[in-house]
Amino acid sequence: MDGVTAVVTGASSGIGRAVATGFAAAGAHVVVCGRDAETLATAAEDIRTEDGTVTDIRADVRDEFDVERVMERAAREGGDIGVVVANAGVYHGEAGETPLPEESYAAFDDHLRTNARGVFATVREAVPHLAADARVLVTSGAVAREAKPGYGGYSVSKAAAEAVARGFAADIEQSVGVVDPGVVATDLTGGRGRDPESVAPLFRWAATDAPAEDVDGGVVDLKTWKRATR
Image 1 (cartoon, rainbow, N blue to C red):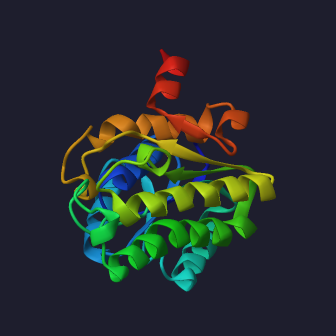
Image 2 (tube, rainbow, N blue to C red; image 1 turned 30 degrees about the vertical axis):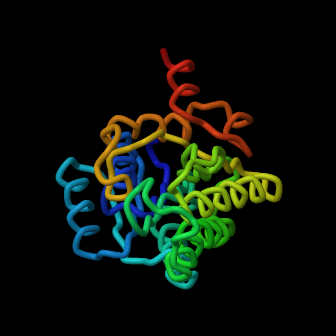
């Protein structure tokens, strides 16, 4: 990924942090954003400690002007953006314990605003700055496609996020697709699942070596990656 400018949202912790670290280790100039400036700065400093190139910008994907500022700075500092990972997300409540009939309107609205509209803002504001061969990756999971009890507005928002990805895939020349890393141990899952570092190579593969036609409008998951790289 030498010379590639990569933007990763929700990079303060979890999957986003692991992906940003992996991209930087592969030579990319990584632009990371998140809502918590202190945690984000710590993540960025860890990347610099390993001789990675990183720019950290406090931003909230619910605010399109924040996102616009991130993309403009990324392009100004690193040229055309080669990879975008729309990873920022929230889960209000305990994973699997938030059935729709009990979900508050406030939680439902913020799930959609962050997890779906935030993806829309991320991709939309990136479009003017994307390289011709850029790839845009949207982090999602099986609950977006297979209804399971107790996932409420979160699963609805992820389904919407995947629809946003497919819509952009149809409307722009660059590849836009979904990456499903399975259940990963983050704050959103209550610490259950795989280590974020173990799925970072999946994102790197989707961003670089996966066939563009498989990424564009599709879902790249762990099985796909493992079959292709074993």
